[in-house]
Length: 137
Image 1 (cartoon, one colour):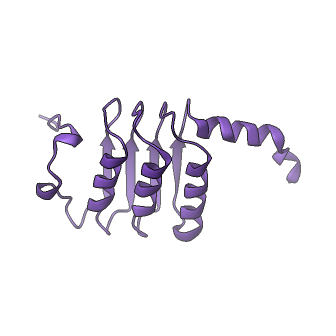
Image 2 (cartoon, one colour; image 1 turned 135 degrees about the vertical axis):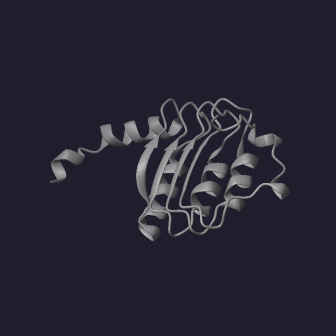
Image 3 (spheres, helix red, strand yellow; image 1 turned 120 degrees about the horizontal axis):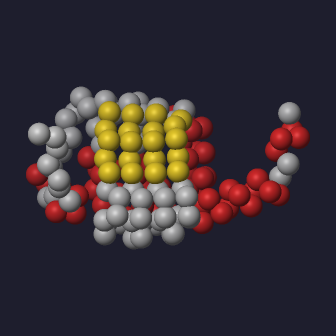
Protein backbone atom coordinates (compact mmCIF):
# COMPACT_ATOMS: atom_id res chain seq x y z
CA UNK A 1 0.00 0.00 0.00
CA UNK A 2 2.43 2.71 1.16
CA UNK A 3 2.07 6.44 0.87
CA UNK A 4 0.53 8.01 -2.23
CA UNK A 5 2.82 10.14 -4.39
CA UNK A 6 1.84 13.76 -3.80
CA UNK A 7 3.70 16.78 -5.15
CA UNK A 8 4.00 19.30 -2.34
CA UNK A 9 3.32 22.26 -4.62
CA UNK A 10 -0.04 20.69 -5.56
CA UNK A 11 -1.20 20.56 -1.95
CA UNK A 12 -3.54 23.32 -0.85
CA UNK A 13 -2.06 24.58 2.41
CA UNK A 14 -5.48 25.52 3.73
CA UNK A 15 -6.62 21.90 3.49
CA UNK A 16 -3.39 20.18 4.54
CA UNK A 17 -2.15 20.02 8.10
CA UNK A 18 -0.06 17.81 10.30
CA UNK A 19 -1.44 16.17 13.46
CA UNK A 20 -0.73 18.40 16.46
CA UNK A 21 0.77 15.41 18.34
CA UNK A 22 3.22 14.46 15.55
CA UNK A 23 6.66 13.66 16.99
CA UNK A 24 8.57 12.66 13.83
CA UNK A 25 8.35 13.83 10.23
CA UNK A 26 10.10 12.51 7.13
CA UNK A 27 9.62 14.46 3.93
CA UNK A 28 11.40 14.10 0.60
CA UNK A 29 10.89 16.86 -1.95
CA UNK A 30 14.08 16.16 -3.88
CA UNK A 31 14.31 16.87 -7.61
CA UNK A 32 11.15 18.96 -7.69
CA UNK A 33 10.58 22.55 -8.76
CA UNK A 34 10.14 23.36 -5.09
CA UNK A 35 11.87 26.38 -3.65
CA UNK A 36 11.66 28.83 -0.79
CA UNK A 37 7.86 29.09 -1.02
CA UNK A 38 7.55 25.35 -0.41
CA UNK A 39 9.87 25.54 2.61
CA UNK A 40 7.78 28.41 3.97
CA UNK A 41 4.63 26.29 3.62
CA UNK A 42 6.23 23.42 5.51
CA UNK A 43 7.50 25.81 8.20
CA UNK A 44 3.98 27.15 8.80
CA UNK A 45 2.47 23.72 9.50
CA UNK A 46 5.15 22.20 11.75
CA UNK A 47 3.52 21.12 15.02
CA UNK A 48 5.03 22.22 18.33
CA UNK A 49 5.23 18.55 19.39
CA UNK A 50 7.83 17.68 16.71
CA UNK A 51 10.94 15.98 18.14
CA UNK A 52 12.70 14.84 14.95
CA UNK A 53 12.62 15.81 11.29
CA UNK A 54 14.11 14.25 8.21
CA UNK A 55 13.96 16.58 5.21
CA UNK A 56 15.50 15.71 1.86
CA UNK A 57 15.57 18.63 -0.51
CA UNK A 58 18.26 17.55 -2.96
CA UNK A 59 18.53 19.05 -6.47
CA UNK A 60 15.96 21.78 -5.69
CA UNK A 61 17.57 24.63 -7.61
CA UNK A 62 15.05 27.24 -6.41
CA UNK A 63 15.98 26.87 -2.73
CA UNK A 64 18.02 29.76 -1.35
CA UNK A 65 19.57 30.60 2.00
CA UNK A 66 16.39 32.52 2.93
CA UNK A 67 14.23 29.41 2.49
CA UNK A 68 16.71 27.28 4.43
CA UNK A 69 16.73 29.81 7.26
CA UNK A 70 12.91 29.87 7.30
CA UNK A 71 12.58 26.11 7.75
CA UNK A 72 15.36 25.77 10.33
CA UNK A 73 14.23 28.69 12.49
CA UNK A 74 10.64 27.37 12.36
CA UNK A 75 11.64 24.05 13.95
CA UNK A 76 10.01 23.98 17.38
CA UNK A 77 12.09 23.98 20.58
CA UNK A 78 11.06 20.35 21.12
CA UNK A 79 12.83 19.34 17.88
CA UNK A 80 16.32 18.28 18.91
CA UNK A 81 17.16 15.91 16.05
CA UNK A 82 17.31 16.76 12.36
CA UNK A 83 18.50 15.05 9.22
CA UNK A 84 18.66 17.71 6.56
CA UNK A 85 19.92 17.00 3.06
CA UNK A 86 20.27 19.89 0.62
CA UNK A 87 22.73 18.39 -1.85
CA UNK A 88 23.15 20.19 -5.17
CA UNK A 89 21.16 23.24 -4.08
CA UNK A 90 23.64 25.69 -5.53
CA UNK A 91 22.30 28.84 -3.83
CA UNK A 92 23.14 27.64 -0.32
CA UNK A 93 26.23 29.18 1.26
CA UNK A 94 27.84 30.08 4.55
CA UNK A 95 24.64 31.58 6.00
CA UNK A 96 23.26 28.02 6.34
CA UNK A 97 26.10 27.14 8.69
CA UNK A 98 25.41 30.24 10.78
CA UNK A 99 21.69 29.38 10.99
CA UNK A 100 22.42 25.83 12.14
CA UNK A 101 25.00 27.07 14.63
CA UNK A 102 22.52 29.55 16.12
CA UNK A 103 19.71 26.97 16.27
CA UNK A 104 22.05 24.56 18.09
CA UNK A 105 23.04 27.28 20.54
CA UNK A 106 19.42 28.18 21.34
CA UNK A 107 17.66 24.79 21.27
CA UNK A 108 20.38 22.14 21.22
CA UNK A 109 19.38 20.97 17.74
CA UNK A 110 21.76 18.30 16.51
CA UNK A 111 21.76 15.90 13.60
CA UNK A 112 23.13 14.99 10.21
CA UNK A 113 23.43 17.72 7.62
CA UNK A 114 24.43 17.24 3.99
CA UNK A 115 25.33 20.02 1.56
CA UNK A 116 27.26 18.25 -1.22
CA UNK A 117 27.93 20.44 -4.29
CA UNK A 118 26.82 23.69 -2.65
CA UNK A 119 28.58 26.93 -1.75
CA UNK A 120 28.06 25.83 1.88
CA UNK A 121 30.28 22.79 1.34
CA UNK A 122 32.92 24.87 -0.44
CA UNK A 123 32.89 27.44 2.37
CA UNK A 124 33.41 24.79 5.04
CA UNK A 125 36.21 23.14 3.05
CA UNK A 126 38.01 26.50 2.77
CA UNK A 127 37.54 27.09 6.48
CA UNK A 128 39.01 23.69 7.35
CA UNK A 129 42.03 24.30 5.11
CA UNK A 130 42.63 27.76 6.59
CA UNK A 131 42.36 26.76 10.25
CA UNK A 132 44.40 23.93 11.69
CA UNK A 133 41.55 22.91 14.02
CA UNK A 134 43.21 19.59 14.84
CA UNK A 135 46.05 21.47 16.61
CA UNK A 136 43.66 23.16 19.04
CA UNK A 137 43.30 20.09 21.27
